[in-house]
Amino acid sequence: MIDPKAVVSPQAKIGRNVRIDPYAVVEADVEIGDDSWLGNHAVIRSHTRIGAANRIHEFAVLGGEPQSIHYRNEPTRLEIGDRNSIREMVTISRGTEPVAVTRIGDDNIIMAYSHIAHDCQVGSHCTFANGTNLAGHVTVGDHAFTGGFTLIHQNCRVGAHCMTGINTVLRQDVPPYMMVNGNPARMKSVNVRGIRRRGFDAATISALKRVFGLYFLQSMTLEELVAELSDETRANESVQHFIEFLKTSERGVVR
Image 1 (cartoon, helix red, strand yellow):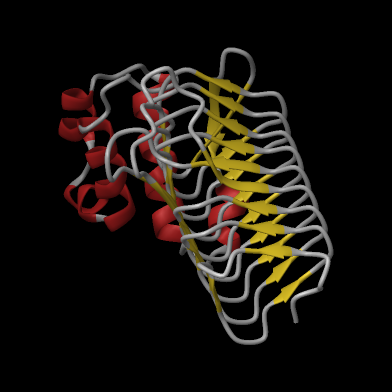
Image 2 (spheres, helix red, strand yellow):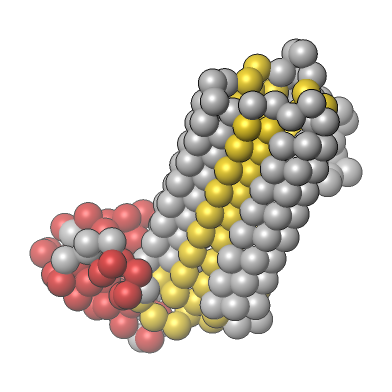
């Protein structure tokens, strides 16, 4: 149902059973999937694709022009998956370079006043508490959780299953399965409670604790870490994911 007080472009593609409340704005070249809801005064800008069963709350602005001096009005995009909850005053920008895409996965909760900047890549099942801010070109893995008012520097990566404390400031990458907090961020521990809740077995948790102790507490290099691990620990899929993340980090990781 589209309220008559909403402003919806005839060039927008609206799915089945979509509710658009009064004073919401949907521009041309927008797609909104089935069973979605758009609250009062929410704005969906052009070149935005939104999947099914999303809930977009009041005064959110999705698909706005990137806040970048490098943007030259190119036809960039924002793509959002399914079943996301996007709360009040959230802003998510499109990409910057021609055909660049800011992408949000499925089943995320993005709380009030959060901002996701241009060219970010966010996975699925993430929770961004109120006031989380992602600068441009940030990558966030699945099941990440950011405490309120977390600030993430441009080009940083946050690995899957990570957690940040309230008011955390990230200037470097956070490897998967870890917990960090502080300004600047400091490594605290393995995110044991989070990964246990998601079904990680005791052997995997033990292996990740071993990796944490060697790499962070004993300050080993990556080469020393790999050499020190047993064959069984190195073979663990989560440990391999952690090591591969370290190998591909360009900004270095939080210590």
